[in-house]
Amino acid sequence: DSGVTQTPKHLITATGQRVTLRCSPRSGDLSVYWYQQSLDQGLQFLIQYYNGEERAKGNILERFSAQQFPDLHSELNLSSLELGDSALYFCASKQGATGELFFGEGSRLTVL
Amino acid sequence: QQQVKQSPQSLIVQKGGISIINCAYENTAFDYFPWYQQFPGKGPALLIAIRPDVSEKKEGRFTISFNKSAKQFSLHIMDSQPGDSATYFCAASMGGGGSNYKLTFGKGTLLTVNP
Image 1 (cartoon, each protein chain N blue to C red):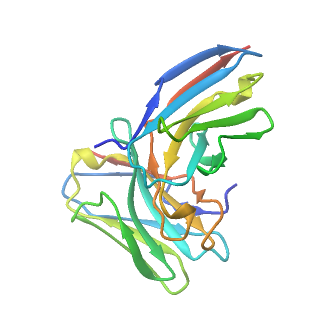
Image 2 (image 1 turned 60 degrees about the vertical axis):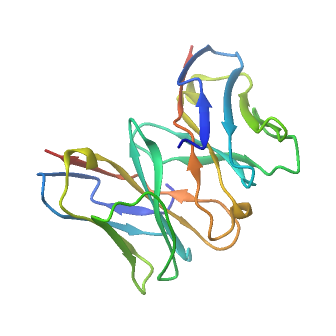
């Protein structure tokens, strides 16, 4: 158990809908990272937050947004969903400037 | 643009054999090279990592070999066991793994170790 908690584990929805994925980082970890894992693209970095502030952006679509709250949990919002958004979405956390990145078990999103 | 290329896509090894997975990178600014192990239904977990100031790092049965001039690094698993069967990802990042880094992953290698 990495200590990173993601909910929901599985989510099935329809095209055009909006979903929210939630991540609770390890206790004391200030950085939260979101990754998308699909068969064809592999693991793609989406966005990073550090202590509530956005720090880095990767290949995140404009239909996607994220935020990190004062209690350090983070949410990834996916809107106007398309079939191609079906993937595993991972959250990871890290404590500070150095150290290991810990991944949660992911949220599997299926868009029908 | 794929900045980290990983091969092979899949690998089958007999128990006790050596598993070798290779990665090549393009961005010379990368300075942190971790390997992650992922079991089905789980998130990736850090296995071993190396920085470019050394050419090799060993932790138990796992060794990273790093060739800075060739921009290549590889994972060697000695005495491979069925419990090593998993997907392995190489990755690279800038900033020495600091708080603002983002990992660029290879596409993964599915390793199967037959008993």
